[in-house]
Image 1: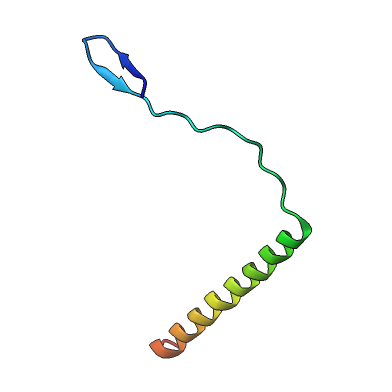
Image 2: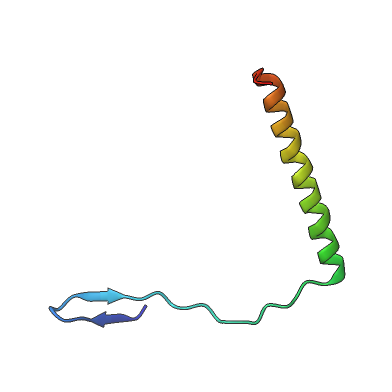
Length: 59
């Protein structure tokens, strides 16, 4: 780990930075999976909200 001496004699420890890389865009198959998972999440949250309101009696 690289240590740096600052003014006043203090040591400052810097973390080693990870290697950089370029992200690749998702393929068509991955995009379709993301859409299916998003729709599933919307249905799940909508169902939870519906159950919460129907049980709470605030209708």
